[in-house]
Length: 200
Image 1: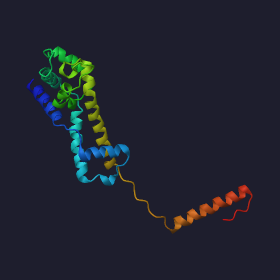
Image 2 (image 1 turned 45 degrees about the vertical axis):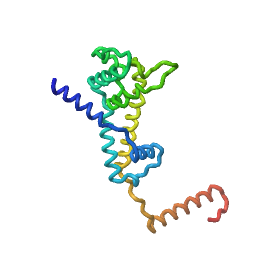
Image 3 (image 1 turned 60 degrees about the vertical axis):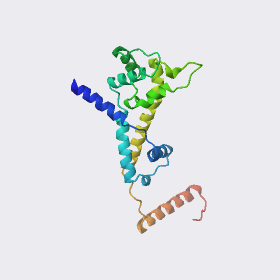
Image 4 (image 1 turned 30 degrees about the horizontal axis):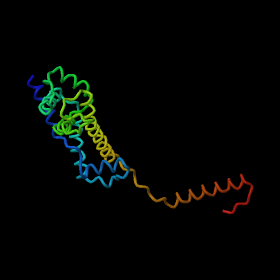
């Protein structure tokens, strides 16, 4: 039991260390998506940063431990006006509805973002306890950002690790002569087919 608790704490800690890519890494991901990233752009320092960020993003993309969701909801309950006591049963419903929301989306920032939502049609959404579907809709953009980042970083590494194509050599004299003979043969066949006197 102690090992399970230790494992859950470790998983929560890994996801908590995740910060979305910014600056140079974000620019690299955008450049790759738009087709403007070249292998020469991928310096050793940049590749090391890509690997570090990918490790954090992959950890954040893992499913959250149930205890992590329960803790997140318990803290949200202190910030809203009509929260139930987040029992195991209530948390299980949220965990089921939000099963595809990765660990890295269950952060203090997403919790505060819930409370800071603008009123909708005069209803103070952010100051009230969410329905499971509402919470899923709120967390989904954060989940998609993590998955998109993982995909982009993996594409950058795949590009860097792809073997480079061998450099083309200039044709030597015999290759040039062979190509010239082939061109002469094609011209002769065209002359014969057309029955005209084409001057080469």
